[in-house]
Image: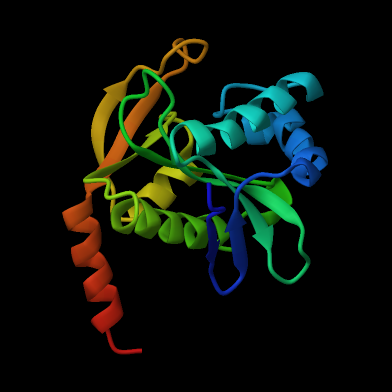
Length: 185
């Protein structure tokens, strides 16, 4: 497997690696961060989660990226394409450390990842599964151009979690991208 690396003005998105684990575990241990991501995880569970996402790169050819701040080299979150067995569609999901939210980093990473999903992975559709009370993620989905499609069910062990599917077709994403690129600056 050739490692995939995406770059944005402020971020590097790359396959998770062992050195990410302490920050990954801190992310998974934070109650507010994990409130809508399946709940707090202890270090051992966080390790299995990280290894599962890293392993999906080999098995599926895609998975969540580790998000690295260019200015500090620090791991600040995970964003990327995600579709484990039983998932309701081809998702681009996001999660950023709480001290790094509110600066547009999740949006910057999500835009790069959606571009990757539609241009490289050739996805025809991109969804986001979001708990109906997660107003920050809903707002980001709207900024990305996604619309509410309705409730969905995730596979176990997340099957009791309420989520709505937000999404858009690759065609809609590309049209909006062309519009953004041709807009006067």
